[in-house]
Length: 353
Ligand code: NAD
Ligand code: IPM
Ligand code: MN
Image (cartoon, rainbow, N blue to C red; front, top):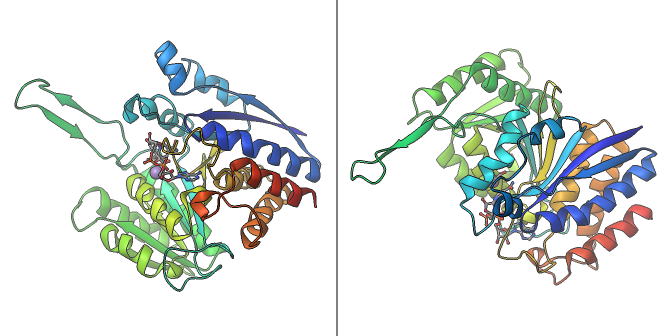
């Protein structure tokens, strides 16, 4: 069977890491005995600068045909980020009801954490981030622009359906992993939305007697992601908090260049989207040194999502083996001087071997 994969390389290092990773996905699929076809959508800021839109009006309809989407990154120094992100990435997450965002943080053998005393295997948690609403709801506006009394309102939107599904997904994951769930909020200050969130955690938790629940405030949690990351198993958080915490999760496990993610529609009505956690990294774009491993690991997550366990494991294991090998090439974010292409060639050999 052949899957239909839509790719949206996007901006900056997005095309570099997507182009690097795709041949490896083909390699893994071949070995596992299935095929996939890719349709590449060159949507992004170059298109916006030419045509005034990040993607065509029927962009979502076109993507809806695919089994999964692989995205690089979006964001360009010449156009405000809220324009580019609201023109491409965020409409896909919302329009395809990708309410469950999974972001693993694993400290691999051979990777040096900036935290003292941590070794491979010591850190291994996954953040379940609510992905279509919360603080990212497009509800609000600006008034009286150009006057001294101008005002901006940005409302958070927390629905029972959206909150319950991310909380339930996180409990399910905790039940399958170590049985520990940390819910991260700011209920001391945000007495409506975040207390609602706490109530739903308590309600859903009644169905998961075997899962131990810890509740943390996001300020203390940010500290604990650095002070005691080894104690987390599954973490559940709102859209904004999940966003911020997963950059911390990425760096304590070595690099933004190693952090993968899955944006999942749990009902399966729409394609899910897989992308590295990182952005378009304009500071290194065009130099050929972006770390492709976050995208390779995101590919492993999409094969797993498609039910192709063996290809998923092959990709994950190849990355693990590469970073554990002191002689293997490493990009500068991991302390080496290798190029994206060096890393990919080495991985290709490992996949074939
Ligand atoms: P960023 O993740 O792009 O970069 C942060 C730092 O990490 C930079 O120093 C960068 O060089 C480094 N880095 C990131 N990915 C790397 C990789 N694969 N290999 C090596 N180093 C890597 O975050 P930013 O600088 O805050 O944002 C840049 C742009 O990307 C902005 O326009 C932002 O809005 C956008 N952004 C997009 C996404 C996305 O598309 N999913 C995510 C985050 C940021
Ligand atoms: C991420 C990014 C996006 C987010 C931005 C670019 C809108 O930071 O995927 O982590 O906040 O979701
Ligand atoms: Mn982010």
